[in-house]
Length: 366
Image (cartoon, rainbow, N blue to C red; front, side, top):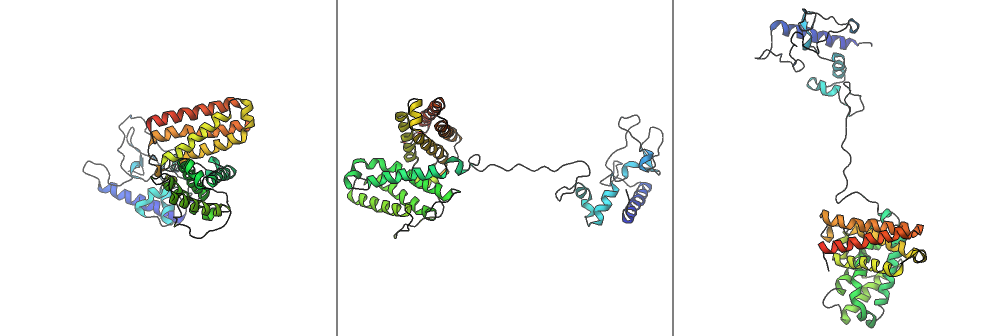
């Protein structure tokens, strides 16, 4: 290894300085040297670990038999361990007081000279659990399919006063679900023709939820307001931007849009009831595979969405534990529908039913 002139100069300076210190007897009150790099005490005679430098490293080791090692009559312990590294750092402008730190710094890609390696903390998961891709929870086709189903349902209820009055109590779960689905459209990585107006669908669906779950739900004026709100939703879903749209924040939590958790829970219960009456054997699974996959996607998504803080249980670990089997069961239903595996379907339905019963026993919302 070639040593630069400035490096030789520093080593010589260090040697001269330490020689003067040793000659003057400079030290602390207990006899230990004051230099930061000379904190070690000489080893006692016969103590294990005592070593002498070999001739190969170019230094001269001296000392009395059994005594501390010396170099040119100076105790070896007062020398810097890596003077050449320190010299190199001094040449690059490193502050004298930070020499040791600079020698071991790996933040700029310089290998650590003492074998130490830098470790970084792993990225932390997002609040509320592991980050999950919305596309993996409900793909574009399943999301569009469920929105179409809700749209058709609301079109029937808003078609006449008689149809509305006959089943207005069934509207809140569907409208609340549409509000949540509209947020999913806003957040979804894939494009929808009405995505820019999804926030208005969310607000209008929320208004319908509020009106149809109020004490004045069964009222001609309420029906008219619901029908008007649905007409705007229908226009947006068809690709237009109707006049008289409500004010709408760009971003909103699932729970804030759905108003109350119980509305979404009723939609989940409807999925369970629909599947139980539609499929009871392998032949039924194959016949209703498309419906099973669709309901499975909805359950998987809603199982995730109900953990949003806006619903009031976002920080409750117990609730999150109950909701997870619902999400996992929905995913299993999709796989069972694709493969025609009835045993898998039956197992998924068992998980969903069990978590619904257990959750309602602890977190009753209706």
